[in-house]
Length: 139
Image 1 (cartoon, rainbow, N blue to C red):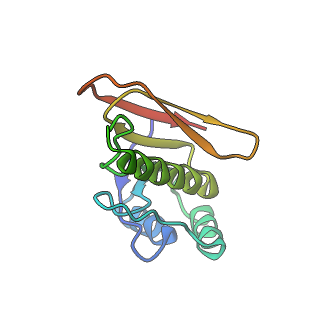
Image 2: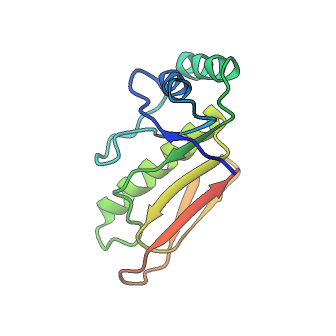
Image 3: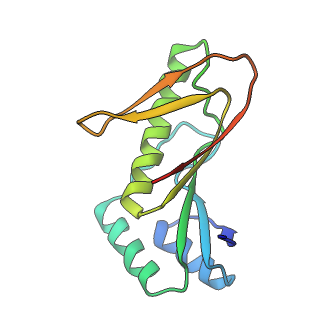
């Protein structure tokens, strides 16, 4: 069982590890972008390397990434669905780059992710009104 802390990645994901260590966490969870804005955050190769080095030198065993709160793949608004897909794809890619075994999101409708040969993610929707789904993607 993973028990830890939700910490800020402000200043880069390595800072999140440092914050987890400061509070004695063995696992940490971060938002890889502001949870209330459509501004996907892509980490540089240097930030990823710094994170991996800092994590390796710490007692933190696991990173979990929490996707933004705004996701709604069942929206009637095509622009909103596009923003949802862009945000979720960026979050999944950040998780893969950082080695996060778990991606956590609260979607407003059931959804399924699939990877094609190019590694792109396609979001497939099923509209079910106001149903709620907690999705945990384990790599």
